[in-house]
Amino acid sequence: MKIALLQYPIVWADPQANIGLLDERLCCLAGKTDIAVVPEMFSTGFCTDRPDLAEPWGGPTCQALQEMADRYDLAIMGSMICKGEWTEGDEANARPLCNRGFMFRPHDKALYYDKRHLYRSGGEADFFRPGKQREVWEYRGVKIRLAICYDARFPVWLRQDKTNLYDILICVACWPSIRIQFWDALLPARAAENQCYVVGVNPVGTDGMQLDYNGHSAAYDTRLVNVAPYEDYEEGTRIVDLSIEKLRHYREVLPLWADGDDYSIER
Image (cartoon, rainbow, N blue to C red; front, side):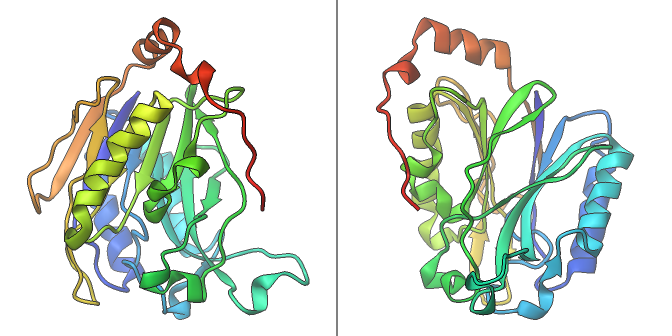
């Protein structure tokens, strides 16, 4: 499976500008990749206290993403600020928003995952509602799990289920350079413990809160080699071709996943 990692600056709090910039990047990828991965909150930057930027699921940003997925025949993965759909009596009145991860597939229904672990120090927990579902999606014969930024610090949440192994963990982030050493350590750790490929995408540049981002997007193979290395602050796109056959052979030869502990997550 071919995956494009798009590492670039996000225009602060300007969905239309970011959609236009993404379209420019995706038009060069038509016929070259199966999935294009963009950073967390790709349309706004990490605006945790801007409810005015939230859109309903199916709103203008979703429509634009679906149109691009159809036009360029590729899936698009990332996250955005979204007005969630809640049932009566839940936490909607207190925290009506979510950081919604997505997969827009060409000519198919879009899939979503709401970020489970909200970054308290960045204000997410004050405004957003955590997700509850652990999603594994199948696309073109490959099983994919999506994580969003802070999720990467919680290995139990991302641990493989023996009955539903995923092949690729994709993590989209807005991870500042001041803490980038943890990002660099966590991605290969998740690959090692889950015997899967891990792809992580992070932006570059300075956001509206004056936080600095130096990228370090990466893709780790079965030997924990980063096959999509970036230089500090490099803007650009890398395409990696991840062999699912090779991954499955690796798991058959060394079935570490089969010796994992049974567990359940209490909500």
